[in-house]
Length: 296
Image (cartoon, rainbow, N blue to C red; front, side, top):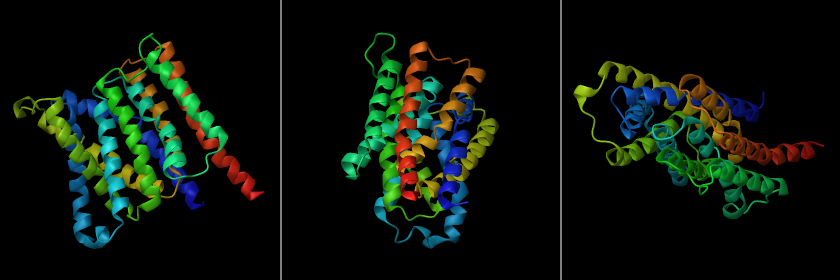
């Protein structure tokens, strides 16, 4: 198995795992730790779990590329917005708006990195924009995110596209230190957002044992193990490919929300969401096609 195939598999599995991430996030909120306070607790737990490893291996962050480190922090900030968004929007729409990021990835490749963009990727942008307009404007309103959760996912997806480009080009961090910085970026973002979104939690109203267990499991499984794997894979793959492979999250997120939370998409939202997914497929197709031509 080649490194690129393994990295692709890791990203694919990460997408599946994150498809169910909304469940512990909402569970923590229902147990008394609402808004960004819950995401802050999760990311703090992840950092605490990783801290002993970094203490033993103190040199892992020393002398690393600063732009690469900043990109990892920025990626954590993006994921924090995504995490918080599940509490303020419909799960499927939050996930779909996050995965509008392939459009951002193409624009970054073309105008920021000055890379040659195949014509089919320009078609992908048009399809993605059409999907966005139908998904958000299908009720006759202006095609823009309608609630706080949707805005967080939309903005977070754009930030994530920039972050993955920076990680791909400049990051030289090992997976666990990268996961630590990623969680740090998310924690700082959560701390800044928390008092703006919800009041400071009253301890008496919090199910402390239930929250503690859920926070610990979520921090270790999602923010340590899966993010460490994602950080390892992201620097070995094209940013757009990372976004596409993570689209398994769309399927699992939408299905789990429909089955467990009773959230369903309207016809317009379904059609628009389908076009957003098609955008991702069109965006990654030229990469594969070029790879085949090169082999020939």
